[in-house]
Image 1: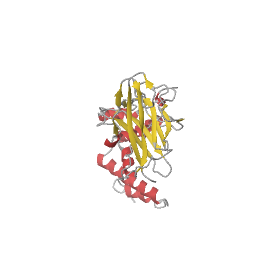
Image 2: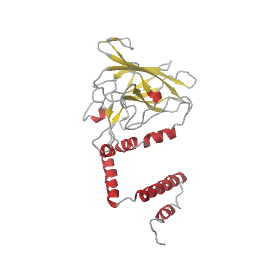
Image 3: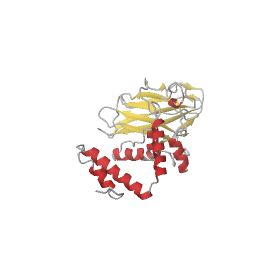
Image 4: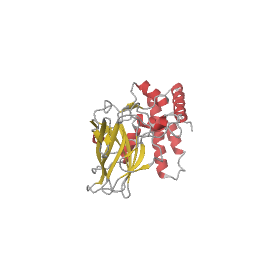
Length: 285
């Protein structure tokens, strides 16, 4: 049988008749149909397809144990937020989720309440506190909050600095009343990496690469659904144009500036500082 451009899709799909993994077959069949339809719709040229292959190759080559360019690609195309939305249709009062981001690193140190997690990071001191509760308002004791963020001067994450020491990363636990608190630096808005293929794509699209200031949190507790989200700084100029589409109104928090004086941990802070408070709500597993 002669296979022309109209019959090719059916021919490719027919080659999967022997696939015994129903979900894999469903996913791949849909991918093939949509990909073929895309190529037909825009009448992709050979030069454009070659450019696409080079782009994807370069994206993979930019990945290492500290950077995930494919996650960045997914984030900036809105795919990460779409997958997040589909997989977290809680609709029950639980704190909203948002993107994971490309800069999480396993193995952050466990710290006590009000620990200083700044390390070598520079920036205004920032005291972040709050509670973790269930949907009935009961405190969730010993919940684990994995925290990470960029510094307060350039917005760089520690893994973006060659041979740099870890900073602004920690595992914080709630107490018996579901409370937590830690000392970090005031987050600032920052650009996603633009030195790779994804950055070049953004520029070609006429888009800016900036993310609004935020703190990453990933929360887990026995018997509850895990929660990955951000705390965004109210008033940031990029809240309405986040490069990865991650902002949700319920996650915007007032970071209040204070003059030198007694800080939330009871100690005296000899320089201006900010405070932010947020109460997380977890859904039962």
